[in-house]
Amino acid sequence: MKLAQHPFPFSFFLPALFLFTACEKGKLEEEAPAENEWIYNTMEQHYLWYDDIPDRKQLDFKLSPQQFFASLLSEKDGNEDAHGRRHVFSYIERKPLATKALSETSPVYGFEYAVFSVEHSGTYYAEVLYVLPDSPAEEAGLKRGDWITGIGENRISLTDYISLGTGNGVTYQLSRYDPQRGLVSNGSVDIPPARLVRDYPILKDTVLHIGGKAVGYLMYNTFTSGPGNRDETYDEQLKEAFRRFKTAQVTDFVLDMRYNGGGLLNCARLLASMLAPSDVFGKVFTRMIFNDKNRWQDHTTSFFNAAAMSSYNLNLSRLYVLTGTSTASSSEAVINGLIPYIGRENMTLIGERTIGKTVGSNTFGEDNDYGWLLHPITLRISNADEQSDYTKGFAPDIEMEELIPGQILYPFGDPQELLLSCALQEITGQTALRSAESAPAPSLLPPLRLVGLSIENK
Image (cartoon, rainbow, N blue to C red; front, side, top):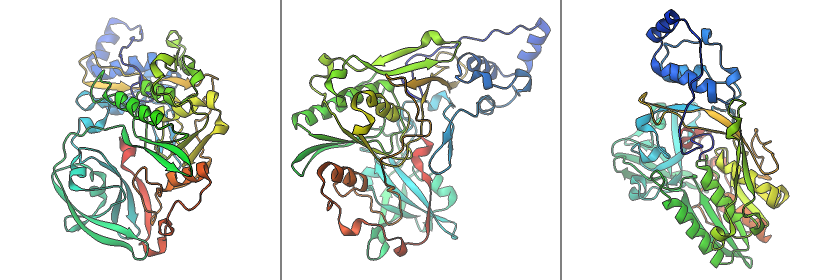
């Protein structure tokens, strides 16, 4: 079950009924690609905003499936992020590329990055956000906070930065940020050819002993249960991490979902069940509401029971969550689902406003021969109190922007890392957790403008 991607582990469609004369039907079959007929019928039956689909006579059934699908979408489908960029939630994809994680079927170098334009120059820099384990990028020694300033002997162009994360073997020119000198050359790195890389959810888990407290920290990057269908390898790794947190008797917890765009709802349910107060076991986690043609599908999901969670549940009464402009969907469902039990006043969000994805989707097309998978929005999601009022995203209690030129990106779990440092200050009351040189000094850098994040295209 995925939110705003593939919310259910099954696929189906109920064709809409249309009355045509034999002549009209024959003409339609002759002129309209079969794929578009299937797309139209599926959307008419299951799309949450099916009332907004244009009249059939206004549609061009000769368009490509991607164009035709886009022509059916409602203006309510999606929203704008904090930077004014619009995100559309429903999407269509070819079957050979479909998977739970793009990096598991498309060859990649295995890192994500932020792109900055160097004003008035036509060139770009990329700052590494994170590197996936067992990837070509990790093998080459690339790490969070590295600046990529060139490819081979050339500067990065508009065409280059779009495909920076995949290709044949490549040499990147690197720089590092020096508080006294700005960006300085840091040699080069040879990246092996792109290959299939697993999109591991856990990028860091650790316990920090600071100010007499044991603080659990988890960088959870995607809600994926395992590398294959019905595979729970990653869920088991998540439970083992929480077993360690429980053994360490953590007193406070920092959940890092700043880049987490969502995934399987059952993974969100598992994570929330291990964070929540122990009296929530078996209670409602989320409510799913479908369109008026499919109200029979309305249902609730519950927290796991006590027997399943006894070795992992932390029984938290307060939670610190690190968020960003890519935090969405199942990440937001964890926050919203815990509010009735922890209380919004006991949840401290640090970072930037989240996307605001209060809807989920079904996957259609897995069992036919059309070669396409549809992921239309089909349902609304709320918490146990029937609240889903975060369409504009969850606003952070403490707003902090990490992608400011001159801001050092420390490793995840490092007490000096910007967002984690803020959380630790809130937890311990200590204010000297970051070095003085961590503060940005933009005057030492060329004029840079943030263009976007590679993870926004995943």
